Image 1 (cartoon, helix red, strand yellow):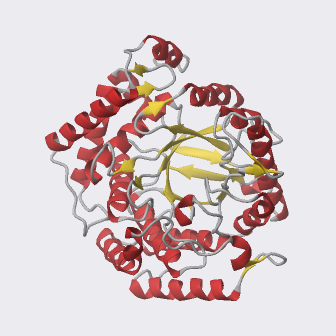
Image 2 (cartoon, helix red, strand yellow; image 1 turned 30 degrees about the horizontal axis):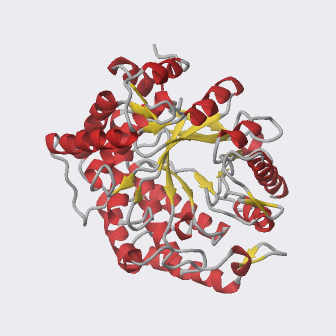
Length: 457
């Protein structure tokens, strides 16, 4: 059986490999596996409708994980796992995961395809830079939403006017401030026990280690242990895992596979994502996985190829190796716009019907603090409506295509194409309620999505 500290030995003794050589080897292997498994996709079927295709994507991803392993970029060594270890990792992946405490506790479960149990909604603007002065009111706008089950947050990039640099002691200050403010927001919203995914201000392991404390991130909370692009790890993230294994925090693996990058088009990127999750079970000691493929050219999770990758990967695990998957929603557009809600609806439908929970929304490419609790409310409503209505795959695909027609033209523009407005321009800060124009936009799009066929909304 694989013991986690074996990873350090293998990172020191594995085959030496330069990062560029690794990228080439992975790209060649992915393309071969796509050919061998005859993987393809249809741009007009962004919700996968073929269980055999999802199963083939899983097989190809498992073969890739067995063949290449992961590269430790700190030591420059390849880390390999045996087929038995990978299978044990799949069998050991939690299918139910309690988060939070008391009346605010929620249980994430492994969802199925067209699952009648609604996805949980993990709300916030993950990884997005947020000014210190707006962090608390933004967090409160999410925490106060009744349909929100768990909280995440943006990144504090400046403290007292000083930039927070990777590896700087200010990382500790910023990450502790982030978690204090997030817990204060939960307390003010009357939800002190709500589960968190936080420590986002920690670019290195410094801040992450500094908040592994019951006064900050509790054992019932979670933190990120990312896989680097593609199929890479580094010693700092291994340190995050070593610390959390004793302390008890939940490990969230994050694989931001670049669709159109090393894996090529959607089928190869799906294979890479499956391999990333399988390897993260061991390399990141993952308790659950964040599904976050992103279009390398358009920097969004709402493009056709990314939607298909999200769908087929979630279905692949639902069919072959059930585990907890949370789908990230990173629209191209920002809060205050019609398009951010169209993108949120399309992406939430794809994730909800394919077997994922929901996290978001990291609006405006995740680059600007142009996000709010209102689009998170909409995300949660969409997820619940998909499950309650018993939406079928062909109907979901039809609705998503109609939504794509409303925003796809923006995806070809520069980044961010449709930035929207900062939080303090779309919410009234004293009352923490949406401004009338933003509320009216939300109600308009909600009506449109109902008219398109999501009648339970």
